[in-house]
Image (cartoon, rainbow, N blue to C red):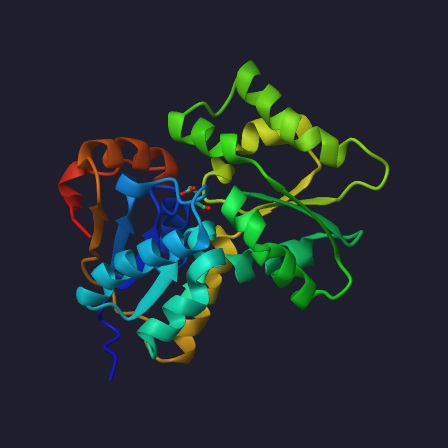
Amino acid sequence: MTDGKLPIGIFDSGVGGLTVLAAMQRRMPHEDMLYLGDTARLPYGTKSPDTITRYALQAASRLVAQRIKLLVIACNTATAAALPALRRHFAPLPVIGVVEPGATAAVESSRNGHVAVIATEATIGRGAYQEALQRLCPGIRVTAKACSLLVALAEEGWLNGRECESIVARYLNPIFAREDAPDCLLLGCTHFPLLLSPIRKVLGPDARIVDSADTTAQCVLDELASTGLLRIRKGKVQIRFFTTDDPERFARTGSLFLGASLPIKAVQLVDL
Ligand code: DGL
């Protein structure tokens, strides 16, 4: 039987998934968490589905070897390419991805039934968000666009300013500056919540913008609660980080995504 005291495993191609970890900490403050960022092989978003699936299996295996009670794929690209493979491989371990929760949030937010989703090339190419949105709300109109440069902007910490806004505008204006525009923008990539400020500047203050971090955290909470694995007893909470490349860089860029300082002593270099 699975032990509720085990940590939750969270995996991303890099530091972007820390936005999901932060949302999970807010909802489940008593849970231990083990995060793996495969920074050595980032980005996943420009790679083929087979390569992404191979990487995702290796990364997830590393977490499973540590003993975890649930696995979160905090990477949109890895969820889009590898969720069914991971579920099959690690059954009966519960595996939760970010695509379905993000699509749920967008369906709830849109009023005119037209949603725009932006993500990496691999996520858009795989059609994962388009499929999930259609499944949740048959007939919904979806405009999907790969915005690869936005990942680099966020990694670089260019989160504001003229250059950043003009790149965001170049991606978003063709979608939103038209009569039958979507009324909701779904951020289908871990890195895009960091660019909320330039996105808001381009779309205006009233735009409906959703990401999957909060809805994924809620999904995890529901799953743990329904299987009796939720940790409610207070105690010392342990959050540990694995990275496949430089721990110092992981801690530095990770702090941006976590929205809090990430101590380097909590980060361990691992080889997959
Ligand atoms: N984590 C990826 C995602 O959410 C973005 C970075 C990458 O391309 O690896 O799609």
